[in-house]
Amino acid sequence: MLKVTKKEKESPQNLVHRFTKVVRQSGVLLQTRGHQFHKRAKSDLAKKRSALRRVELRKERAIAEKMAKPKQQR
Image (cartoon, rainbow, N blue to C red; front, side, top):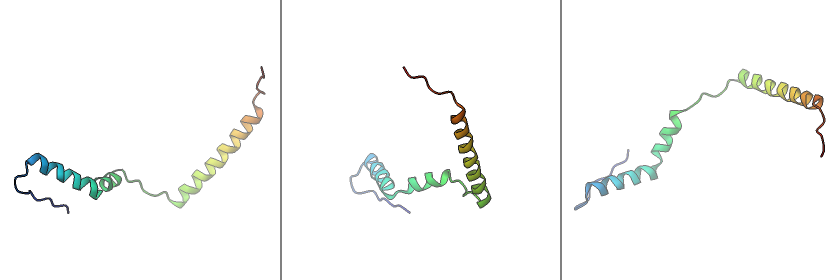
């Protein structure tokens, strides 16, 4: 937990400024933002399926590239 105490003759604006500086330097906000949109890890089956899908798409692209008309040269 972060703690900032008010110094003598310190304005509230300076106190808030020091507090925000301490929060930024601590990295607390970055951690909470990272946890905010946390995604679950893919299961082994899902990894295999996506890998197979990539392989199939590569094959389809290679076939489509071979079947394409040759480019005209100027």
